[in-house]
Image (cartoon, rainbow, N blue to C red; front, side, top):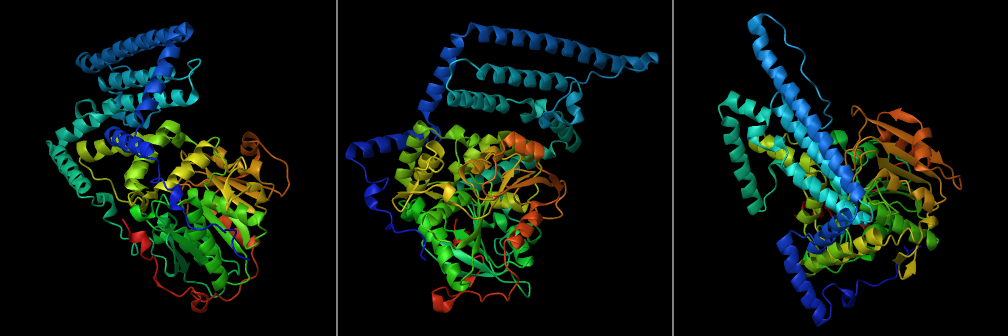
Length: 601
């Protein structure tokens, strides 16, 4: 049975570039605005700030709370300043008269920016306490203001946090005790190294060269190095079949569907933490999709093109290489959302080629999409669409910037202090090298994704169409293995968990330690890893997120091992490995893994 796709290639009449003259004029002007504002909507900034300011002015009770909080903080800061200063004087004078100074005043600091003991010394202790109080006051000022639109409130709070973070005393040489100590110890050599690092980064940026942290890793040698062959190439992807390392394999192959906002080798990093290599070693025949890094030529490719030329093309090819066997399909992030859409359409059309569905940090319901929702509303999408209409794609740096500013201290300010003030280049690790290898996205696809899924939640509402007909997640009847991560800011686990509301299939849900990337790359033997897991039988009763978290058993170690046991339980007895590719079936071996598409920049 063929995959449920009867649509023709994307019609240029619906292209972002095919607009009325007035719309084209609007887009060109709005693209200029995007270029001038760093792709941030000035309308969103204006409306959000005005909404917050007007409602705050009309809330005398909230104003009174803020005045009281400010007074309380000033009193605390004054007391802390006096006590800390007195203790400093005691430390200097006590030895002169033969006395022991009293223990210093210690205020608990949970913020890891100020974890170093040097921040407890005067006057740095006063600086960090003053900063933390200011940060706490602005958080109170921008939240819970009666009448403010929730999205506007979140945006104003986010912007306030970014401005305050910029002026943290940890970010400046004269107010950071660690930088002062290093500068004194090295006679300023750290600042000279930092200046060299800064100019090196600027030169790389101007020349569009790879970041310094990627130099220690080469794709195909250090990363994405699991042996295999490319057995299919389409307009959008290469399909890799990995070479077996065991005498026998499970008859049902595993298909990895990564997101196209990232290179696929997040799941094939170094040999010790490659999920793909691990699966092959456990006796699975593994296939993986490696998406093309699109450019202007692919501007009009949409979500259904990714289904047809990606997921469905891979399923068809695997069916020719490993005939008459169900496929264990595994989707990560946006790849998991695509897999959910495709599996739902296959269920609708009675296509039974999938044996199971695994979703890794993948959302099917976007009603609680996480922190990325800050950057997505109608105003922002309109500006983004105009910019993409000019370029034909979303530049990789724009998506990377959104993720960066969500974790601005860890990814911007701490790096600045480490590399430019302390003069220490960050130690290269494979995950950072992969993160720096960003991808672009076709304009049409990205607009459809943001509008239909993020903004309007069409998939959960049963309004998402494949082949001109709506699909529903309830059509997925295969066993589901879904993984959420505890500190995921891209796909919060409570959002991933919502598949329990959309499907009555058997669902094994795992909540693992870590974030969106590090929680998934969780190889056996990795220290400090744990997870919770519970299975709801097909047609079973729903548990709320709180009930699930309170009752799900906890386990130490990697969830990979539990997933492997789950795959084995849903597979047949081991057999001899299949051939590499199927030349007679239109799937000849084209080249060695990792192929050509993953090397495109």
